[in-house]
Image (tube, rainbow, N blue to C red):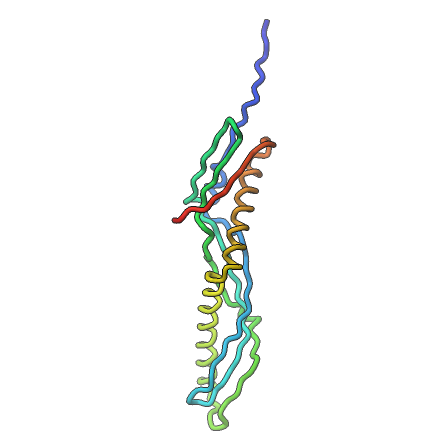
Length: 169
């Protein structure tokens, strides 16, 4: 008699996640006021600058520990990194500007504006990387995205357990 063999073996797959390489896990936005105190040209200015950033995880650096029998995956990923940081130039708002009546040079005003925007870029990048709210949100998002990716690439495993922890690069 020919009895068919039925097995309940399902293989957990993680290679698709590693192949993604660098994956965006969180987009962030911040608004900063940038000031230029009265200088030798008599210029004082205040700009409201909006910046956006993108936190990503490098899955090429991840470790995947898979227990096929228990349908368990431990994913060890590097902490998310800020990989994009941009000023939304169309959204810059001039909040205030005063100029010495003896100096109406457009070039001086342009130079002040360029310096202010360069300072804004640095200030926004620093805010994204040093503010615990942004880094905690990025870490939470990295865990959620990673768990979802593993589950999405293994839809036939209902009892799949996925744990994510961070490693230093």
